Image (cartoon, rainbow, N blue to C red; front, side, top):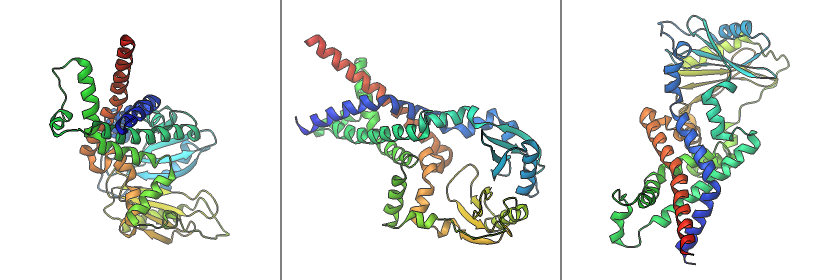
Length: 369
């Protein structure tokens, strides 16, 4: 067997093994790509608010309102998503997680959302775990994604034209040919055109499954280093721990806004156990989870303990924290999402067109026999 014959054999069987999973991952990625835009249209009653020329209510106020509505639930985080968007109090209990939407200016209760019944959350869980237990589903997705990366590389090797005269033909689809030839050309040319971006989407997707991928990205851009050491939160020893230190939480929130006055999106994470601190974060753009700055405050008095603004982070950590934005195309706003959607849609067609090629050749070989 020649080299290309071996590559073709590998490409064929790896494609047949992983094709269905790759199709599911890609098509759910397409559906999830514009989830924010779709939800803004279909759920604007509780996602969007009228912007007002006054500051947001303090986290403690929204926390108390959430307690009144769900007295048995604990509050883990309050997020402010922008001047024209509702704030969300994230709550949890032993049986479920619930998100409570409030007007950040008036404190008006807008909606309680259960992620287990939310369409886009379900789509996201299919994309990440196939709706299986996460410790099983994520490895199935991870292995299939690794195979997909091999398929992209082996597909390029197969596609690469042998002669200069074949170059033009390799870049185009012969639409006037029979449908099987059109399918063959489309599989090859579309796979080539999306290969680079599809490879980036696949690698950034692997970071959600395997921590070593994120560590590898960190070390690549930093030429070494230890991501765990840079991202490690400070630890404090407190004998008088009060997890309901509302004043401290408000102070932390105010200090974060002073440190990041231009931030459009902010969050406050409450300490949940002894030794935890108040963790706040700020993003420069609404609904974009990149260029984040993080701060840690004492749970008793709200004093700033550690400051990790975006500018002070290493290049490797900056790239790792951009991972979600790169994977979803969100980092380039709407044009980036359109690119991610288009590439994911074309990628979802590759297992289908590839199966048709295999099935057609198998059928043809039987006829010859």
